Amino acid sequence: MKLALGSDHRGYALKQELLRILTAEGHTCRDFGTHNTDPVDYPDFAEPVARAVGRNEFDLGILVCGTGIGMSVTANKVAGVRAALCHDSFTAQRAREHTNANVLCLGAEQLDAAAARMIIEAYLKAKFEPRHQPRLDKVARLEKGPASVAEAKASYESASPPAPQGITGDEATEFLRTAPHPRARRTKEARRRMLAFIEQIEKEAAASGVKGPTDISENLDRYLYDGS
Image (cartoon, rainbow, N blue to C red; front, side, top):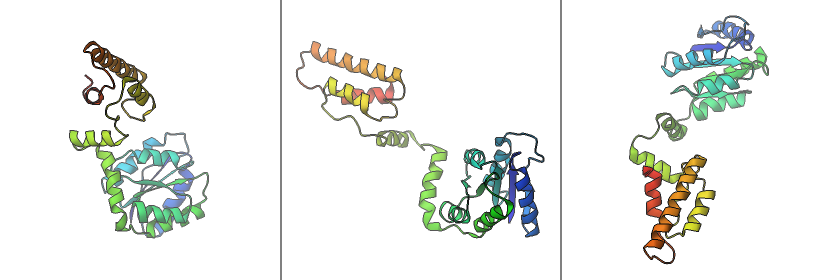
């Protein structure tokens, strides 16, 4: 296989040993650094490995830092990359079989060369099971964001239940205070403006002589979507 390897200073020694082992086993490896134990920042080495794998320049990537956490967090920010932090052969195998992970992250402070070699062996031998592709398609959509305004609105509406129809001002106030709506609760200022909007509707209803519960859901939806 064609493999891309990278590490920070804490993962340097383990990465060098893995390079030696993998090359001896016949794999084509490229070392993206770091090249010594001087302190460095893990994103500077996770990013080029992840981007190279994301562009399909390499079959798989292997990243090593102290815990493997920083490398996995960084690599997963790159589109097309599915980085998995693994501590044993079982999770490494599942990472390929279930999530088609194309970057393996290891923690040099938890693993010696022998343990890391066993993990990598399980990772390289495993094959992706296509039955999991629909789930990966959903993951991939998160990288792209909504494809249209309609899709964005549908996603927004499904985030939490809509306000009930025909509610009173007091009920609407309580709804805004408790509902986990991503935009209604986004900031204190947004909530203040919405509550003020409800009060305005109540005053207008009272001035027009409307009695009993007032249906404000349509105006509230207009406010949420249009900011008017």
